[in-house]
Amino acid sequence: MVKFKRILLKLSGESLMGEQQFGIDPKMLNYYAEQIKTIAKQGVEVAIVIGGGNIFRGLGSDSGIERVQGDYMGMLATCINGLALQSCLESHGVYTRLISAIEMRQIAEPYIRRRAIRHLEKGRILIFSAGTGNPYFTTDSAAALRASEINADIILKGTRVDGIYDKDPEKYPDAKKYDTISFDEAIKMNLQVMDMTAFTICRENNIPILVFDINQDQNLFRIVEGEKIGTTVVI
View 1 (spheres, helix red, strand yellow):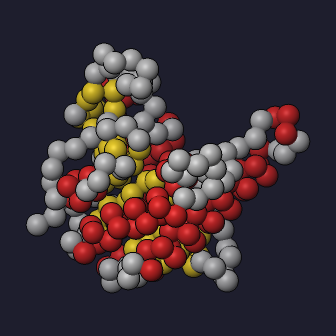
View 2 (cartoon, rainbow, N blue to C red):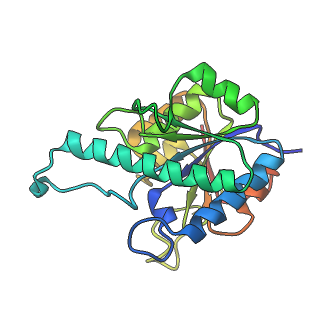
C-alpha cells in the first residue's frame, strides 16, 4: 500500500546534466525514467515539473536580453527537457503526456486542468513544461501551482542533498539536518527550500514539500512506500 496516491515530482534542469557542464546526459535520463516507472507501477499517479537550467540558466543585465525575453527562453528550455524525458519514459514502456503552458500544438498539449486530471486517473504520467507560461515566475512556482490544481498529496523535490539543513552541508560538516520543519520556521530561518511565491502557494493550500536526494537509488520508491527519507515541510 503506497502512502501517496498522487504526487508532483520537481526536478531541476541541472539534474539532467550528470557529470557534464550543460545539456542532457542520457544516463541521467534513463536513471530518472527507471525511478519514475517503478513508482508508477505501484499505482502512484505522477506529475512532473522540470526546470531548464541545464540549457538556459538566465542572463545578467549586461547580456542585452531583457528579463521577459530571457524568462521565455527559459520556458522553452523546459520544453526541450520535457520532450527528452517523455521520449525516454516511453522507451521504457510508460504512457506519458507532455503539457505546455505555452501553446505549441505540434509537440505538446495545452494545459487544461480537467484533461490533465483525467490523464492521471488513466495512469498516464504528466510532464508539465513552460513553467506557468508567464515571465517572473520560476519552475518552483509552477510546481506549487500545478500541485495545487491537480490536488497532489505532496511535492517531492529531488535535489543532490538528502534533506534540509540549517546551513550548507557541503560547506559546513556540523550542519544540522531536519526531519520535519514548518513553513513558518523555514521562512524565519531563510532556508530557501523554494522561492517565496512557491512556498506561499504550498502553505496556503496545505501541500507538504518533501526534499530528498533524488540520486540515491530507490529513494523515490521508498518515499511512496512510506519510509521516512529527507525533510518534510508542513504547516
